[in-house]
Image 1 (cartoon, rainbow, N blue to C red):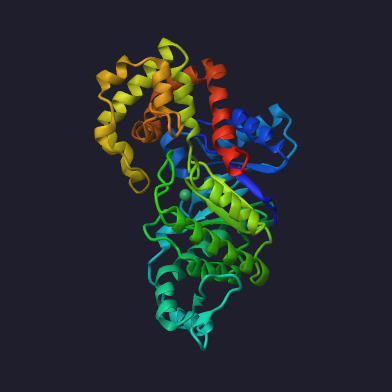
Image 2 (cartoon, rainbow, N blue to C red):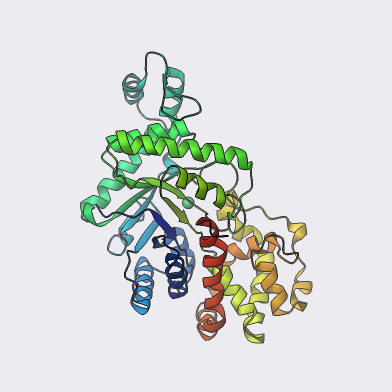
Length: 417
Ligand SMILES: [Zn+2]
């Protein structure tokens, strides 16, 4: 099995043009003494909307690594794949995020449910894990509910894993299981049984992405009860420590945080707790590099600025269409969006400050940022017109990309501020 390493950072990149700037940020952070493994992640959904292929992501990563002479490990993540679309990723990816969210809550046979209950029920109806606030329930009511929610998802994970392993040497890739794109969070108890069953299926899962409490909206900070998140995250880490020691799972097993970009308020919490339990972490950023491209373009003179304004105006007009695929992870207050006539009058630096995620800056507008985050489809529709502007203004754009990852993300995650 290919081992991922303790701290890894998923760098999404819609248009695949910022690999080098992203790697520069990771290389710079490595100088602080913590090894960070860069992972270029892109989902089938993103590829379809942008019109790129899994091979493009591989090329981006390899080119960046070559250009900078990066000696460390790096990966290319087939993000959120399932049986219907994994094949196109097989030759190019060495990290597979098996998304089983759609298989959650679908029933399995009564025999399977009864067998699961018989295998796992304990005489006193609980399992006490050292360090947990309260024991894991193991009574019939809980187990029956769990079975109805997750047994089918475990079977789905097994099917996807077997399919990948039949076409690719299992020694050559990393496996993640994601369940984040659902309404109901998984509790630490759910996580315990999910990991136990994944181990039972022989799936060497190294990263697991549960749905946490609170909202992980795209491109903006965490919204929710920080205390509750902290408690849940800590209990999850205790479950993971136990699972690594007692289930047949890799020692490198760790949590994966999806839509992890910009979740500034929970970074110190996660950082402190993973250090307390000596665990690793994978943080997946959700393509906010594209917003840095927009910020760079806004600062690159009239032609590029005009493109940003056009994308905003069109984004407003097509907001319903653009936000539909992201309904679960977007919260836009329409009354907080400036009218197109107003936006049109702004200078580049005002647009940059509106988009750039600096909490406390009076000009930062999270609603404009979220709208623009999902408006990448509009840039994709412009094709070469957009790409050539990005290429032409790389000198202004690349520092934005690097600074965002290094100073707003990696510094906070690694407790360097
Ligand atoms: Zn996800």
